[in-house]
Length: 192
Image 1 (tube, rainbow, N blue to C red):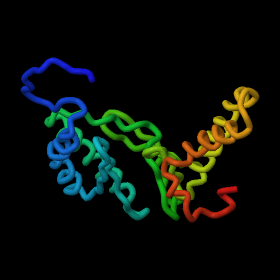
Image 2 (cartoon, helix red, strand yellow):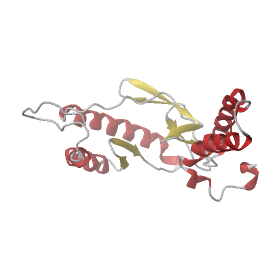
Image 3 (spheres, rainbow, N blue to C red):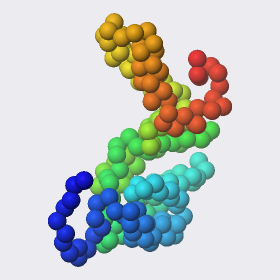
């Protein structure tokens, strides 16, 4: 067991403390209220917060402006709370819905950067496409699986057949384990 010297902690939370997540949620409780006041939605996972909104095609331009204002206000709140807002990643805005052809926005100014509208985006390890078909996610899983199998090829000659099968199954299943419940109910044509 590793021991560290004791000392007085004047502020902050010791790393790996069980109080960390609870104190973080208490510290950022105002953030949720600020976002809700702007008419946006939020979901949080550990220390990661995602803000989103859903609007009809006719309200897109107003929504983009409103979203930019709310991001500015969130950034100011975070600065006052001694937190830092991750800058929006270029290519991280996902458009979806059935009337995409009526939306003519390609770039969205947020803070001091521009976010480009894209057809697919990765969120918590899942690739979401604009139609929510998960075809981009399945394609990425297949590529990852084939890559893992190719990595095993040089080693197979020095393994028994059973060991090679076990290694291949382990490499492939570890790729499928992440968010595999999303694959349930997908059309058979996508899974073949």
